[in-house]
Image (cartoon, rainbow, N blue to C red; front, side, top):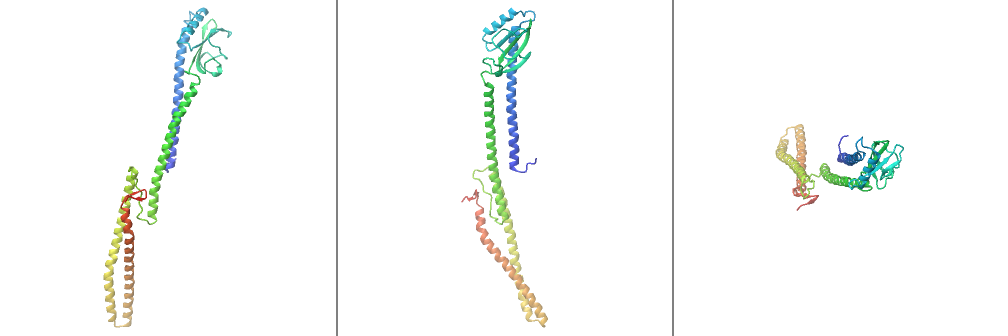
Length: 312
């Protein structure tokens, strides 16, 4: 895709910004969840190891005792424990599961119907004697925390997107207006209005400097055109004098013509001289009229303008 217009360039920038912003938000959300899950997994692994005990010390009574002790400790008060036998019968713990969880780590949600838990992690392991120990911990500090965090991300990143879009719209409108002012000036000059200039904003800035440079260029072009016109007028004025002398000389010569043919040729030359003199007179008259019209406008165009209004 070629960026040939301000609209295309702005659209491409906004698209890239939206993709980057959405990608960043999704990545931050995913990394946050993964970090929380790793920390929770580490915690439930420590608790599970403490309750399961060493392989040689996994009698049912000892496991029950450690489960009761863990449930009475404040640090593990939010830990869910469940001990079942080989047939799936509940032997002890403080939770009840609605489905059989696989061995190892797994994710649990509100659908598992564990009282007081909306999202969490579980570790299932065998502890000998056909018994299975399930250790559960929440990944949310309060219910629906993930939904609240998602809303926070949406509001935060959405605000950034709205601010950037608003700034880009303002940028496009401002740039487009300045470009339109320059284009209208160029079109007016093409149509013949050599006094038209680009408006200069009073607050200054890069656009004002550019407009001033453009106007100085137009002033210089106008001066050069005026100089060329003056040279042409001077040449026409200088040529009219010798041409008038030539015409007078021809008029004197026609009186001394000896034959009718000579007299006709001289009169034809006089007629051509009259035509040339009339042409030079018309050129000088046109130059005088143009000078009388352009001079006041040129003097006005030398003063700075603020968006089309004269500063004086």
